[in-house]
Amino acid sequence: MNFDFIAKLEPAVIAIAHQAGAFLKLEQSRFSADSTELKGKNNLVSYVDRQAEALIQEGLTPLFPEAVFLGEESGISGDDTADWMWVVDPLDGTTNFIHGLPLFSVSIALCYRKEPVLGVVYEPFREECFSAVQGFGARLNGKPIAVSPTETLENSLLATGFPYFKFEYMAEYLSLLGFLMEATRGMRRMGTAAIDLAYTACGRFEGFFEYNLSPWDVAAGVVIVREAGGTVTAFEQHRSPLFGHQIVASNSKIHAELLSSIRAHFKLME
Image 1 (cartoon, rainbow, N blue to C red):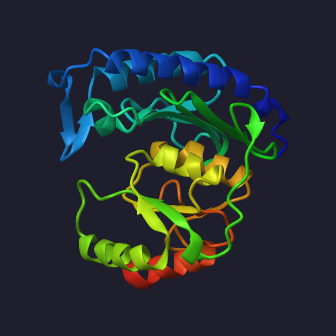
Image 2: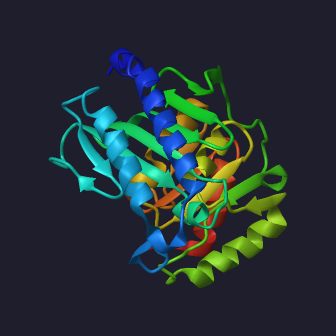
């Protein structure tokens, strides 16, 4: 499919992400931890997430009325089998936000038949906006970006996320971390998968992996990495990196080596 008409939406989606990011930045300056709620173990939410999502949905709906809306806070707005779907995390890095860390992002993706074709990740404090449309490349603040040229795991800096509510694979995860700490230049844990993916797309990381993620955490980042020349899969071949709750993204050159290392420690996941 030709996505020329989707590319025409990109500037408006970027503007909506900037608007939501400005709201988040302002609210963090006056946020009280008393406003925090628990959706589940260590799964935090506040009025900020909900209001940011409403702001984004209000902006996106008239842009492409035939697309349903899937948001982290509001769920699905229509038929989840629809061809077109907005997938949105209004505040990726809620725990960072609540604890006063200036590291969080707005993540907006448009998916066609469950595959992201447009993605925007905006980091308000750094004023960095990563964006991509399938077939049109990836950009940072409008300038083209590409993944790192590093060819080996040994020379790579990797990102990951720590389990925070499902711990059944903790032993496997710690074993993998121990291996990668020795096999790479280092590991980083940012607390926002959208930024991990964006940083992989622009070459700051060679790769990123995590499990127990949701579509809104990764949808925008997936298309940005792919359009920057990277590769995105799940740990297991039969799973979707969007809907399979596991993701491996890389600069392509180290993908086989990184994926092999992950599979050697995780074996087959349920």
